[in-house]
Length: 428
View 1 (cartoon, rainbow, N blue to C red):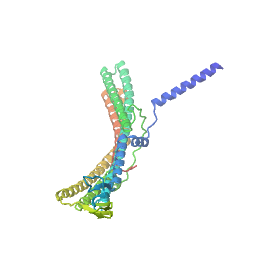
View 2 (view 1 turned 180 degrees about the vertical axis):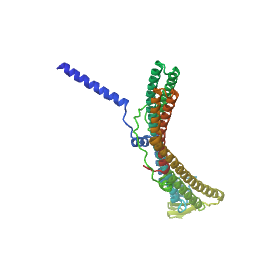
View 3 (view 1 turned 60 degrees about the vertical axis):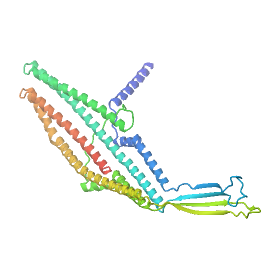
View 4 (view 1 turned 135 degrees about the vertical axis):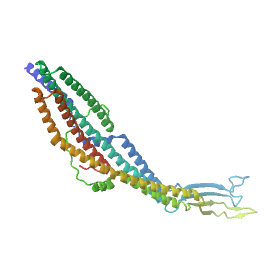
C-alpha cells in the first residue's frame, strides 16, 4: 500500500512538472486589448501628461480670482516731540484702511477663458498620446506575430532541407548523385540556421520594446500571438476624413489653442483700458481742549479710486500683434494637420488594399502552386529528371512566398492600427 501511494505521489509530481514545462514552452496567447489597456494605465509619460493637465486646470481656477485686498494701518501727522500723543494736534490720528485692485470689466473672465482653453488643449493631447501608444503596442504585437510565423517557416524549411540531404545522400551512395549537391544542401541549411538566429534576436528585441511600452521589466516573457483574419474595411475616404474631424484629439487640441489665441486677442484689446484701485480709510481722532485749540475730535473717513493711465501704447500694440500671430499659427497648424490626415488616409487605404490583394493572391494562387511545383520537383529529382539546383530553387520560392504572406498579413494589421490612430477611432 505504501509503495502504491509513493508511486501515485511521484506520478502527480511528474504530471505537474510536465504541465508547468508545457506552459513555459507554450505560453498562452496574448490579448491585444489587455496589452493596450495595460500600456495606457501604466505608461509614465501618460501619467506625467495627466499631472500636467491637472496643473493647467488648477491655473484656470486661479485665473479669474481677484488679488488679495490690502489692509493699511498708520499713525498720521504725529508730533516728533511727543510721539504717540494724539490730543495735542488736531491733525494727529490713527488711520486704518483697506484697498482692492479691480481689473477693467471683463478681463477676469477672459483670463479664465484663456486658462481653460490651455487646460483643454493639454487634456486632448493626453488622448492623442493614448492613440499613439495604442498604435505602437499594436504594431509591435503584429511584428511579433510575423517573426513567430517566420520562425515556423524556417523550422519547416530546415526539415525540408534535411529531407533533401537524405535524398541526395541516398542518390550519391548509389552513384546517381554528385557530392556537390550535398554541399549545396548543407550551405542552404546553414543559411536557414543563420536566419533563425536573426529572427530569434528580433523576437527578443520586440519583446523588450513591448515591455517598455507596457512599463514592465524588459525580460518579462511575452506569449504567442493568435492567428487572425484580415478585418474588412468598409469606410470610404470621405467617411474616414469626417471621422477624423470629429474624433482626432490633436484637431480638438489645436481648436482649443485657436480659441485661446482669440481670447488672448480680446484680452490684449482690453489692456487699452485702465485698471482700478478702490480704497477706504477711517481716521480715529481724539478731542483737544486747550487754551489755543478746541477740537471735538470727530472721526473721519476717506473714499478713493485710482487707476493707471494706459499711455504705453507700444507695449499694448505688441500684445495685439502677438495674439494675432498666435491665432494665425494655431489656425494654420490645424489646416496642415487636416491636410496631412487627408493624405495619410488616402495613402494608407491604398496600402491596405495592396496588402489585402497580396494575401488573397498568396493564399489562393501562388503558395498552392509553389507547393505543387516543389512536390513535383522532389519527385522528378528522385528519378533524376531535374537537378538539385531546381529542387533548391523550388524550395526557396515557396519559403519566400510564405514569408511574404505572413509579412503582408502583419503589415495589413499594422497599417490598420496606423489608420485608427490617424482618425482617432477603432475601425474594426
